[in-house]
Image (cartoon, rainbow, N blue to C red; front, side):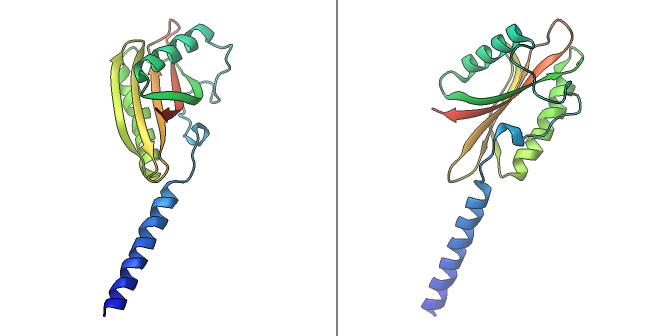
Length: 156
């Protein structure tokens, strides 16, 4: 009887370890879905909205305040969004919430209307070798657009 119980415990432990390893599959910022309102639907170049990108990333880094550092990024233009952030942020953050939840992720931090950025949400994915990602939306630009960033973070 004891041998059977030990065998069952070992099998259960192996199943848990296997499930944790499956959820630890390496992801990157290119894995995240592209919203239909991104215009263009590809990340913008460094020379597009150069000053705004620089200020946006600097504000985001300041918010992260040494807890995380940015190791990779994809920045998109969120086209012609109305000045009320709520509908746009709810839609895109909901999509990313669902995407990360399917990968075994969870929200570990978020902020709205913080200095220099409109909203940020930080996700943790993986159990054994966790990865951290952020979804960040800029304040509105003079042309009525906003920047959206997918960031891969390193926890400090």
